[in-house]
Length: 435
Image (cartoon, rainbow, N blue to C red; front, side):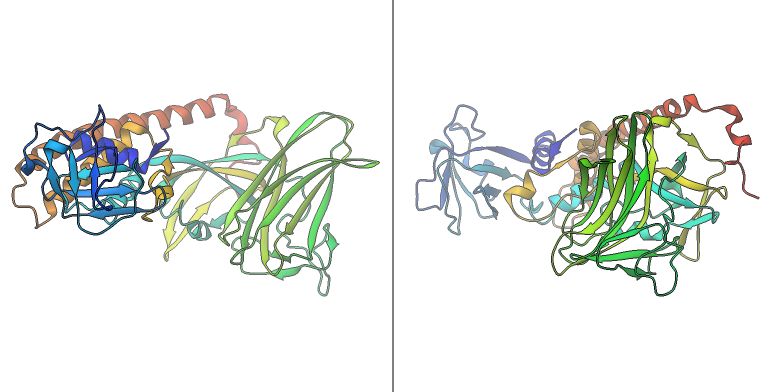
């Protein structure tokens, strides 16, 4: 389940008879030709020239990708000649595209990404319940690779336990105070941020400011997980740090650092605490000079309790273009099981983008891309005879539907396994329907 963009294109192109690929033996004539005389060469000396004359040629020089649609084929010497000089080494990866209008740099990546949008996966999202009863999920759409855009994508909501942090939504913040109640400024004072959904406030730190809170945890071995939302400026790198401490001071730390690209994301960190640890320090900070990070909804809970119970009811719907999730009016840490599409792959014409991988199931993504490619070819007015493509589309469409049903059945079985240990009496506790 780690197919590269190139491998997806190779397999679909091979199955549909659209792509030949290999590694060149040399580029002998001033970087205008490509020769492949290897044992597994797709270029056969017994071919007729018309087989590949005018085909498209994709070449990878190790850094960038190049595409030429004016290829001349010389079977006797197993040579492809093209117009437009490309500086190449002797051994380069290449693809011959027998349907050159299906551009491997402009069309193929988009068709693969459109196919990834059809396939769903289960993704966990932590959420701090504040007892308000409903939560606006629109801010999750800022995560462009994994947007929550419809009610049908929210499948489950699980209660994980109380938040070990005090004032986790920063609601308590006296006028004129430098930090919210129950928190301590490690260096400097933090700014109040009010542009976060569902929660009282956020806090904004620059590189000279940190905010921390100490949690008593002594007495037994414990496994703690922490999560916090962070949104940074252009090259910010917000950090969540867990510091295990004894009465004598720091023992060891675990950190989770956001990617320095300024996108909104959730940081998650875990730490195992031996019995002699008395305090867990949770620290929020920005690590890049001149940048700022805004943090909100920090939560810390004890995994050792083994509490993971589904909250009933869970209702999600769109209201005035806002995606709302209604829950019982309880407070604590929770986790959503969201049904999300697989992240899109980069469409850049580079070697790195071409070998980037997706975790989508191999057979499912291959069938999805085959259906999308055949549909594109049938819809394209530049292709005269579409009979063979139409016949192949019927086969691949059935194959995709069968594989998609099997994929969704596995996701359903996973959910049943998660919920097998739920206690029937759980709905009669305080997590039942809110009043």
